[in-house]
Length: 351
Image 1 (cartoon, helix red, strand yellow):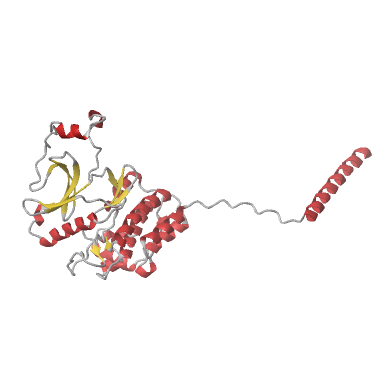
Image 2 (cartoon, one colour):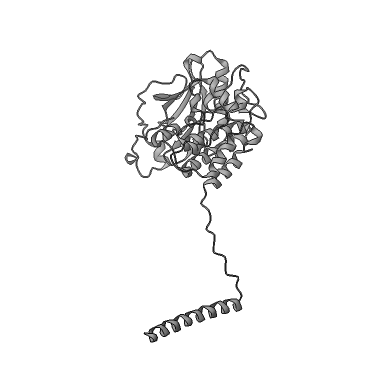
């Protein structure tokens, strides 16, 4: 995704322009400077990202002058119909979802050399991996706010029968206005109906650092698999590291850790205090058995919000003394005061 501010200056545009004037005005859009993406209406401005399956370009529509993020199957996979089907499937899945925390897809096609592509709005900001690198770790309130947005987007995807299967900080994008977008449904799986992507049974789709135990064991996955990965993201944002960083560098060691080792709470590594309730949210999400985790994104989001909510002020309980008891107490205090005064007077007179 693009992470630069839009360079076009809106001050050069007229304040008002009628529809008739638009139709009659000469077509004066400048030609894009970059090479055409053959077979598409877009010209490449620059590459802004790439993964194992595809590349993402900032591109400009040659006729409209509108810029977009265009994801296209990598050239080296031009003879991989399975990956081509996966990228088309990602576009169609996102195209039928509408949610503030998911990316819209508004165009889909095939390049001149047979590679599928789709177009999305440009996003301006950075992913949460970069955000974490800037700050070292986030406050509990900020981490909960960002992860809560990701859970909202995932909840919409889960409601549509999709499991992302590759949630990680790099796939959570923070826009300049504070909105979090869940990116890259390239290995998503449909849990009901059609549209499931075929996966080689000898492989485990996902990133070893953020794979749930059932993914490591190549067992069936569902929405709770994504919640495990969300728990790992939340852990990193709070502690500045993951629970099994000592196993990084070895995919087998990471799989063993996710399957067998119990994680320490994030408060064990965090630089600032973490509420005990927030520790519990993270550890619940990281339960080895899906049955012991949160059962939905909404349930986890609710527990997360509650874990950082300030405690309500507790009003003082009203006195339950009866009027008679209050009178007796006041009378006793008054008599004690009189006795003290008399004692002082007697003491002075004796001198």
